[in-house]
Length: 386
Image 1 (cartoon, rainbow, N blue to C red):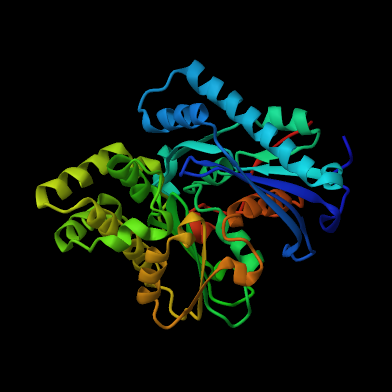
Image 2 (cartoon, one colour; image 1 turned 135 degrees about the vertical axis):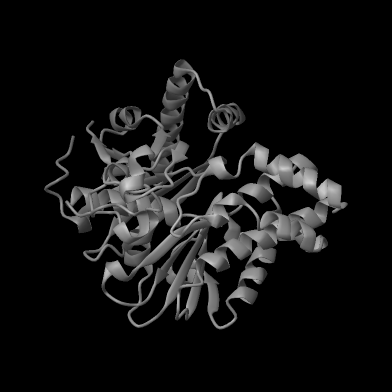
């Protein structure tokens, strides 16, 4: 194994791997950072989950009872998938494959129940799978994984963790920016344009693509609403919209840490049943749920005073219907996807976990207590040596 800890940040190549609540596949980013943790060089790739693995993971995250053997085998199979995908990505880069020094792998969240903070955090739990040992042994470099548990141990909610990375990647002095990531869950980071990370405001907002994706699959047999085409054919049902706005997570105080637990099959079934009762057509259900997604984001951003620019990232940034709704809700801000800042909107989170891995290697904390509710700032992740 090549020496790592003695290698300066600007010479390290880090592979960030992220698979989120959408359960569609893994984003991979090979990144080299500058001294200030902005990007010096970046290469990206996407690896779709094979259907059997996706089905296996979906059953685990959707079930209240999971066998020990089933969980362990899924952990191993997912780690093997990560390794195979990483090797294929590195091979595609040719000589770059020999430069790899470190991996930052978020893993696949299979359970996250962490609504309390401070004294109320005793019951917070989080679990990500995807064997870091398989990655470390297969790639021959150290792997940072299990990023959320240190924050949970410090009485935090373990999420969201990307806001500090957003600061290093996007912050502009004296410019108020709202970074909105729309994956399975939507989350926002407000960067007020100062140099102090304690000024950052961030939270999970509500559903991102998750509810729309599940309803699209149930109603149309499609995995998602490509470019918002289905939503654009329908109209918003005010009665269904009011029903959605009664969801229990909206009664909780911001900042929030949300997961598939809040937007699973039971929630989807209740929405579809209620829409049927109201006589709402299938296109309009998608329109209304997309509108609710935008509402949750705008609601979470109400306390952000000066928004000069909105940066969109994640799969939802390609949904034009949703983007138009968000522009209506932030009329005074210039709205772009993150490519305007030189970062592909589909890979912001894989880059973020590469960055968080480097913060840990450099002995720097990666959480923000005002965001997660933790008692203090802590370094994140566990290192698995090759």
